[in-house]
Each structure stands twice: as structure tokens, then as C-alpha cells.
Length: 244
Ligand code: ADE
Image 1 (cartoon, rainbow, N blue to C red):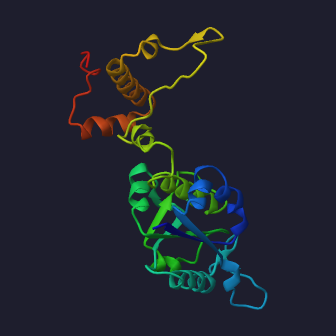
Image 2 (image 1 turned 90 degrees about the vertical axis):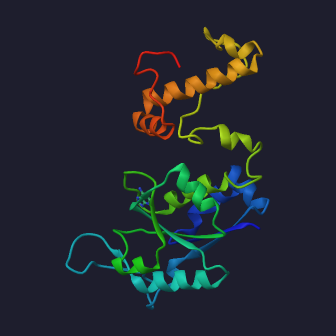
């Protein structure tokens, strides 16, 4: 059964290209995902069609009102069963990680709520099952964050990308960055492909790649490396000056 994803947003059109191209577009065509978009503005509670108002207590910007958000979410949740795990995209949420993408990909239905303006009226929180941030920066709205979540989740679905093992082998599948890859030509502007990849010894290549992944992670992402070492209950062999 397709993973049903409902997007609740003020900018349904932002998703047009995203949903029709690449891995997500193909997954959509192959019915691995079924995406529906709902415009919060269609649930405006006044004759002007507005969905935001000035903040109580003063301050700059506008705040998305409860009424239209509740109405839109309740409408969407009633469209299909189960009602769906409601994910609010916000910089205040739980950071998106590969582990969280795996968790979300196992859900039967997701409802993604993207905010705008200065934020939501705080009283929308009872609707929310989970709040997710895609990083420590502020976007002008939750739509791009929702696309990031959809992309990370969709590519994990069986059949979404060519070889299933490519999901297994890539960056973060074991909490490590990916090893370097090369393709033809063997020599490009004086830069050559590491000899070990050319000699056809698959076991040596596997070990070299594992080593490269570890070394890259250690150099570039000490936070991920520390977590890896802890998880594997290893000493970092390099710290001890030993060869692994
Ligand atoms: N909305 C605005 N900024 C965001 C972020 N960093 N992550 C998720 N949603 C957002």
C-alpha cells in the first residue's frame, strides 16, 4: 500500500516540481507514495480569506490563526484512515536524522503541517504528534522542510531507488559518511583513481571503503564519529596510535 502523505500548507504550488521529478516523482508515479495537498487558506473563517492576524501583546509580523489550521487538519485527517501522524515543521522541533526518516517511513500515513508568517498560534500544539526541524536555521516557511522530510522518507520505501542496497551502503546508514566514489576516466587533469579500486579484489575494496568512511567521518564530523565509536563499543584505533 502506498504511503499516504498529506501536506497542509499556504503554498500548495511550491510542491509542483518537487512532486513530479526525480526519485519522489517516480515514487509518486509508481504509487509508492500518494501525496495530497490542502491549502489552509481554503479554511479561512472570514470573508476576506485571511488566515493570520497580529500577535496579542504586540510585536512584528503576523501569526497563523488556530481556526483555519484546526479546520484544515481535521478535514485532512477525516479524508482517510488512519488519521495520520501529524508532523509540524518548525525550527523548534526534534532534529531530522536518518533514524527519524526511517521511523517516519514506517508510518502508514503522514500529515505534514507547514507554517508561515511569524509562526502559529501556540494553541495549535494539541493537534501535533511530532515537531521536526531540518536544522538550526530559520526558513521563511515549513514547505521546504516538508519537502526535505518527504524526500528523505520516500527514498527509503522499497522500490523507490534502483538497488535497495544503495540505501544500506550510503552515508548515515551506519552513522558514517560515505566513502569516496570514482568513475571513468581513470585519469582526469592529473587526478587518478585510487589503484585499489582498479585491481578487482572485492574484499580489499570493501575494507578500503570502510576505512575511508571512518576516516572521513572522524575528520569531518567528530560528533558522528564519537557516536559511532560509542555505539560499537570500540576504542578509536587511531587515538591509540594503532592500526585497526
Ligand atoms: N520552518 C522554518 N524553519 C524551519 C526549520 N529549520 N526546520 C523545519 N521547519 C522550519
